[in-house]
Length: 200
Image (cartoon, rainbow, N blue to C red; front, top):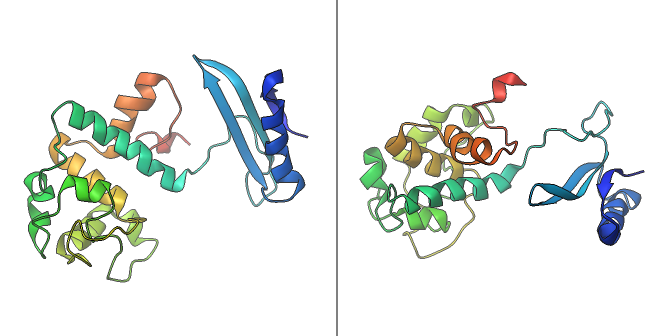
């Protein structure tokens, strides 16, 4: 039933993976652990789309909120290189951000989901989310919901735009370009971002 490879000592992990399908908690997934470039576990099973196509070894997956961790790795690299500073206000890097009561918001507030910009006050469509400049303009003109540092609310849809625009202002590169340069290309791992999306 399950496709792929699993070292003998990790068979219990394979059984857990298999149970998700047996109990109909999952319709398509993959799971892999590599150590020093060698697979310990590399499993996949189920369906990859609504057309009932089988999940394959290299099926592309949208990782949704896990990209926040990727963006924060990029941010950490830039902090380590003294390009960014956690304690500096966002407007130090992004001048138009300071309007609408946002002067005090620091990079640290955004990374810790304490900026007060956790949602869009204006109605946003799926199409709007594909228009980077439009979303940035909305965020520049939006008041925070609370003073920075006083409350924590998950920045589900705003986080990537906020981090991405700060990075774009100081490097002139998109977050996707930096993910490719500093992570996926350098480490020889697959992570599809807007830099490569036209290939698929």
